[in-house]
Image (tube, rainbow, N blue to C red; front, side):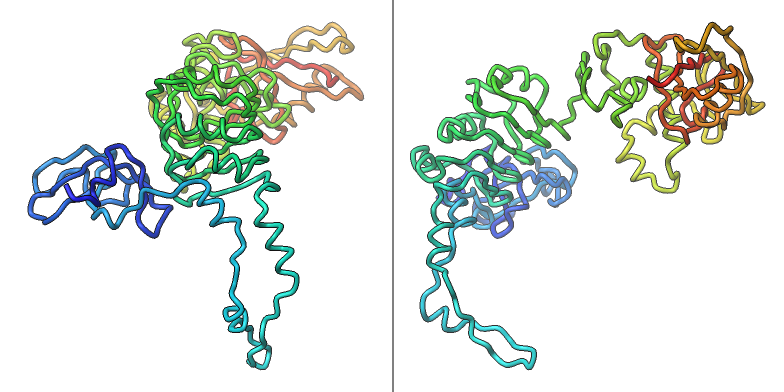
Length: 434
């Protein structure tokens, strides 16, 4: 193997020479039949930036992640990256222009005449920017950073760094991240988005001072999170977006805005439908009936809000919509279900029970009414005020359905019963606003 190819290793993260944003993983080193010299087989992250799947001319050299995510490249066409100290200097050190270079600098006036540029106070500005001791926040995103360099060098260069953005670089080893955090004792916020991190951790990384850790699109598994959680002694925020954590069975989201409809979050049935593998939500077990009714109700909710002519946008916003719609056999025009919950409504009417529970509303008998499926929450509030003769009292409504552990607040006045997936057999609880 040539010395150039020997500079790389299997599993190493690399980027295309001259393009730090085109990142991949080395999967093969050696000769390629029919082509002279040594080659590096790369599986590119973008999934479509290659030419094949790791096989060429009928021979398989490696298995790529996609049908067209792999390619062979000459070693000189790839870069193994630079150190973090070098990246910081490239990003933050002011260029020191020579006298001759300054004399050659000019701009054009409105009459297209050359006007010389005069540098004023550059010494003071350069001195301040070159003083890395004052740097508390730094971003070296997509600069091809692959190592932290010498720990002592990094520690002396940016001793007061508190926030570091390493988005889109070439890190993969947790040991490097551990060394980074040990070298930068003041570091509290670390962003590793788009760095493909290893999941086989032999030694637990030391992240004791990190308060906010961003691991979006890092290919981490929940097993990895479980392994390294002992390092999170100070953690207050952990970001795990786009990691396909599809095996989580127990989720507790209490006191988080995402689970509080009053704060713009999602009601329980939406969370149940979207988190398909979860069996326990906020300490309450999800029964098969609740799972089914939640999924149907969620599909009805989405159908009432989406534009059907934009399937890509639907898939982006509601990844499980098409799957659930097909699984439950829900038609585009009218939602279907069992005898309770959302169901097919030939007459366009649904039968619901209205139950008044407010402490100052007085004792009132429940009422069963047939309502158009298009009745909005706002209209239903007005009807309830009329049905129960409630004067000068603002009400709020909840839906109570069999199989659901808690009543769900109907907060959006413009949403219809059909859009919310409420069908015959449901109970609407009428309460007063606190």
